Image 1 (spheres, rainbow, N blue to C red):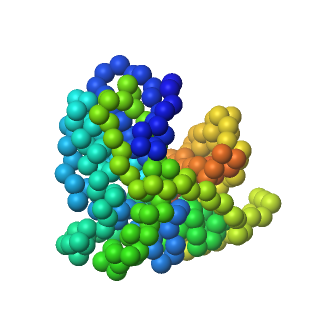
Image 2: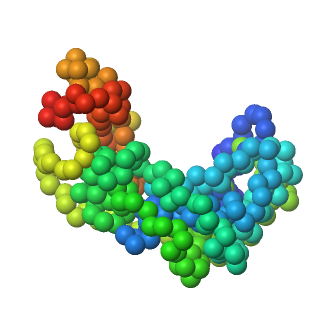
Image 3: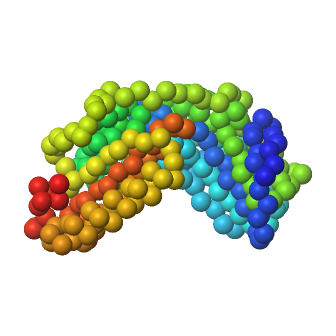
Length: 283
């Protein structure tokens, strides 16, 4: 593995046989929004794709809780032109015809933090209880209508988070000599993740959700994940035997280098949709 820089962007190279592929990832996601700007990062991702045509044969854009990424693979010259176009689009946001860019765009199409059903999702409810209406706690709440965001709001978001210092390019081979990443200059973003409601457990509480979920804070480790998967297997067997659901779902959130949130979720939509779901029995 090699590290270098291109136009102020950290580049990590790891040689993998096959077609050249790369990912330009920004340290910006849904956790960096506010209660009145939920969905802004996803809107920026959409505007980048709307402004510039995708050039590479294979491409994908994603906006998650912790990061936003633009992926591309294909012949080296296509990959070079693809990322040059992405960076150019970011540098020129928002577009002059912003109103046209958001026509027909559904704010509910974003998907973050394994939240399936917004306000009624038990995993989102646990994150919201733990972090409050900020950061990871925002994942429970609906996005703002994208037509309400102003050009200034979008511009400020891009200038803070979509910069060369807050980006990393990973590439599966030697970066082509022609590779350029003309992004706005800016530092890496640092942030804290304060808890607003952290009690030593076990703690149970009721909420207006469909289903049951469990959340456990852990120091990052393989052992913690293995233990949670073992617990998931036991819970899945128990709820299946009780006729509540045919399984239990493992969910997780990477908060930072010192803290992960691991959890389980049992919902009526996971397996059986029926009227016989009993949250008390599942709990």
